[in-house]
Length: 491
Ligand code: NAP
Image 1 (cartoon, rainbow, N blue to C red):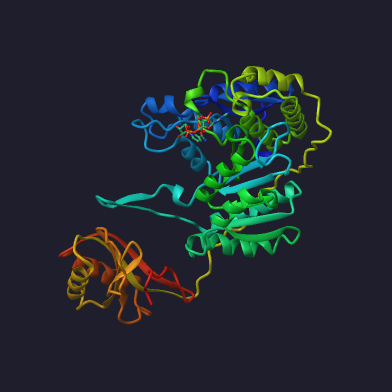
Image 2: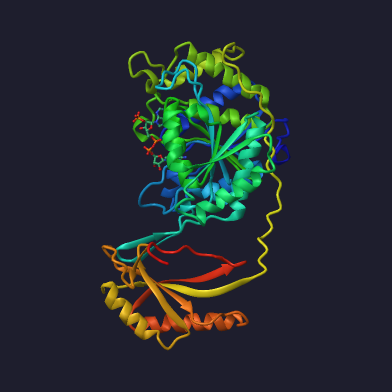
């Protein structure tokens, strides 16, 4: 990892710092003061992203000079960024994660000394490893009709391979003994199922670590009932987003939830929380989450000693009863500045009863991301999505008639995933988007791809003579396996 670090002529490690929006500048300044006091050899290059950049009319929310800086330093400490309504379409946070392919989001949740919670004393010490690029958060969405929106849940085997191995490697770097993989593969067999299958295969290469699969909803339930049973949880992007807010609630709230966005080339360190606009400029916000993110950054930069010293000073401060208002309310609360001062004055001290885990450098998995070898693949049909206000029987009769002379059979029509034609007695309340599933009457083996495509396009044209089509999807088999799911009620 250190090969990516930019060292300045004065021998310091250069880090791009983005103060961000709302409370961002306050928590970033707190971290900068603590890092300076700990004498960590860090130099900052300050850059802009977020609200003020959107206001300049840059729809990504990230200045080109910020991108240049990150390309150079490869390490970022970032305050929270707002996504203002009306300036830009995309979140600047997501833009940064995607631009620099920081595919893994590591979100620790550890009980903190002196911070009272419902779970105090139970020793919560777990880490969510969240996939950071794919899933529904790839943000690929369409209005297929004026009233029906569709979002694409995109999961690649490569993305799963990377995140799963990152989770195992992270467990090893912290001497952790178990990894759970939380998925919804019982329902989403192809997308979430890819993560489960990839996890189970990769686990065989990590015999020193226990590997468990858990259904994500039960994972949420177990996290509330018995969080201490978990050490590392690897999961898809949206599940990880939700579970990690839950886990931050177990240890005192968003003020205590750090995160690291890790990629092969760039790492971005930030708090889980947002810009908390109502507290901006009030000097009351808890900077712990970003301080903990900064200790992760220091370890990433091989500055283990400074990281440990800061973490110990933070623990001493919290245990001594110096708390911001999110922990004890307004009366007697330390301001952000006072809390920071206390940490600085506690540098060099530690809590004997609160030992830090022995951490080793995190080795990012090197892997050859070969494509799956497919000896046998064939197109067996196509799904055409149409917008229609007809009832299923009328629509089915019309489409069956229109396509009767084509090389396809209309196998079924579904509405929101339930078969409604031919009728199976379902009481589905249909919306104006239907999926029409066509299968080739004869095998396409031996046919050229261009001929298969031509037949599918002819089919679409037939349907389009009387109906509005919105989306087309090929139905394929790979190595004899169906590459699509069945509808509810489909045989
Ligand atoms: P938020 O900024 O995280 O704040 C939600 C609440 O969490 C706050 O009102 C406060 O709760 C508590 N909180 C957050 N940070 C805290 C801290 N450091 N110390 C103590 N309490 C803290 O979430 P939001 O209000 O939903 O989002 C505001 C903006 O931030 C949005 O524009 C959103 O898009 C953006 N955002 C950015 C990021 C990021 O940059 N990574 C992440 C999330 C959201 P109480 O009200 O109970 O005191």
